[in-house]
Amino acid sequence: MRLGVLDIGSNTVHLLLVDAHPGGRPLPFASHKKPLQLVAYLEGDGSISRAGQDELIGFVREAREFATRHRAEDFLAFCTSAIRESANGSEVLARVREETGVDLQELSGDQEAAATFQAVRRWYGWASDSILNFDIGGGSFEMAMGVNELPDVALSVPLGAGRLTREWLQGDPPSAKKVNALRRHIRAVLGECVPQFAHLGTPHLVTGSSKTFRSLARMAGAAPSAAGPFVRRELRHVDVSLWARRLSAMSSAERAHLDGVSELRAPQVLAGALVAECALELFKAPSIEICPWALREGVLLRRFDAKMFDAVEPLPGARLGHAELDSVRRPPVHEGV
Image (cartoon, rainbow, N blue to C red; front, side, top):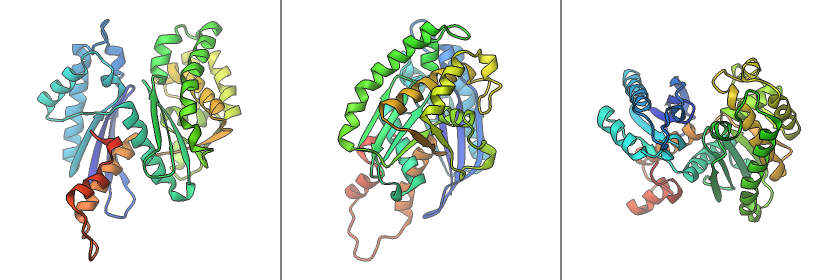
C-alpha cells in the first residue's frame, strides 16, 4: 500500500510517499518539497496574502498530481502553526479545498506534539520505557512524554525557531542584548511547562525530532544524513550551549557554511539552539538522541494503523464492536487528524 502525507509547515511544504503493509516497516518511496515560508506572506493584520495563498495552492496541486502519478492509494494533508495562527486561516483552507480538492486538516499544537511522540515511540519501541520528546518547528515548540503509544502529557508553546527569529533577533548577527532578552523569554515560557511533567518522573530516554535538532547535532559532530537513519546521533547539552554562543556571533551567511545548515534555515538556527539549550537545562537532560521520525511519520502511522485494522481478520472469538474499534483507531488526543 502506498500512502502520501502532505505537510504544510512554517518553513517548507513537503509531500512524503511511503510503501507499507500490515506488520511491515513503512519505507520511503519518494519525496517532493518546496521551501515556502508562509509567514513571509503575512499582511499587517496577520492574514496570509493572496500571493502566499497562490503559492500554497500551486504546490498543493503539484503534490496531488505527484501522488497520483506515483499511484498513491491514500493521500493525507495537514497544516500546522503557519495557517493555524493566521488571521484568515479558515478562508485559506476553504480556498485550497475549492481550488484543489484537497482538504487540509488543521492540527492543534497538542495534536502535533502527540502525533510526533507516536512516531518517536514507534521508532524506539517499548524497550525505551518512558520517553520525553522535543520538537522545534518554525512556529512552535512541542514537548511530549509518556510510557505508552500516546503521551501522558503533550504541550505546544510559541517558541518556534522562525517565530523567535522574526520577533526577537533582528540584526545579522543580533546584538548580545537581544540574544539575552530572548534567553530570558524562552526560560520564562518553558519554566511554566516543566512542572506539568514532574509527576511523570525521570524519563528513560530523551529525544529530539525535527530538522532543527538534526542540524544542531550535525554541527556538533553527528553523522551526516547520507549515513542513513539507523546511525545513532546524539546532541549533548554542553555542545548545544557551546554552539549557541558561536552562532550568536555569526552572520546568517557564515552559518550557512556550517555542516547541516541550509541557507533557508541559517537565519533561525540560533533561535533553535537557544530553545534546545534551555529545554535540556530545565528538564535536566545531559543529552538527547535524535529521532529520524517526526510529525509526518506520526500522521502516516496513525492512518496506516486504521487501515490495518480494516485489512486484518479478527481473531477467533473476538467481539470488537465498531465503537470500540473507533476508540482504538482514533484516540481523542488525535481527533481531526
